[in-house]
Length: 333
Image: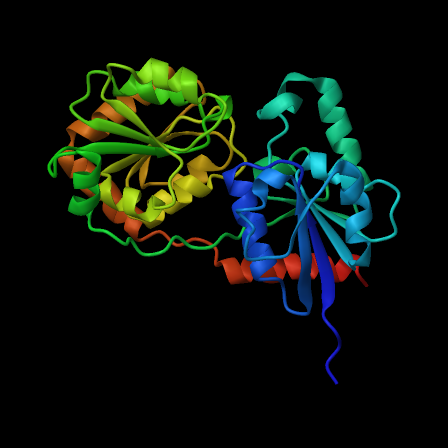
C-alpha cells in the first residue's frame, strides 16, 4: 500500500502578485508525496485562492490552524515570523525579497537583523534567487514556479482595437505592482516625447500618484488585468526600471512572449534579460530613458532582440516543484 501523502500548509500574511501566483501554483501542484492541506492568509486573498482550500486567518488562527500539517511553508518574512511561534511542525521559509534593496528592511539595519533571525529559526530557507540568498547563508536557491501564461485569447489587432490603439502604433508595456520598488515614475518620464504609447498594467498603493504623473502624457494605466498574455502579445517592447527586485517573473514572461526588454539590473534582471534587451543600472534615469529611446527608434534592433527573446529557455516549473519537494523531505524526515 502506498504511503499516505504528507500534508503541507501554506501561510501568507500579505502578498503581491508574484508571491501569490507562486503559492497558488504550489498549492495546486504539490511535490510528489505531498498534498495541500490549505492556504492560510488574509481575507482579501480569498477570491484569488478560490480553487484551493483557503482559510481566512487572524494572526492567532495562522498559528493554530495548520497544526494538522506535516510541513508548514511560510511565504515571506512576515509569515515566517508568525509560523515560528512555538509549534512542533517543521517550517520551510521562502524569502521573496532582497532585504538589502526592497521594503522596510532596505531602510533599517534593525529590520534586516530581525529578518535574519527569523530565517535562522526556520528548519529550511528557500531564496528565490542568488541575490536574495546573499543575506541568508545556507539558503537553497530555487526560482519561484508559477503557472505559465496561457495562449492569448485575442489577436493583437483585437486587443488594440478594444484599447483604442492604432494597429501600427508602437507600444511599450510595463507589468508590475504600483509600488515604489518598481520605479514606474521612471517609466513614465522615459516615455515622454517618444513616438510610442506606454501601457502600465497593475495596481497598488501608488496608483493615484502615477495616474497624476501620466496625465497628459503618452502613457496609460490599464489597471489590474487578467489577460496579460493578450497584452504582451499586443505590445512591441517591455520595460521595467525596478529599484528593487527579488526575481522578475514579469520580465521572464515578457521574454517568453518574444518581447525585447529594457530594464534595470535590480535582482537577477541582468541574467534574465541577457542579450535579449538592454539593462541599465538601478536608479539610472537618464540611462533608462536613453535605452528605451534607442529601442523605440530602431526597428532592426527591436527585431533582433525579439528573436533572441523568443529563443530563451527558462526553468521548468515542474522541476522547480520537485526541488521544493526535496526541501520538504529533508525537514520532514
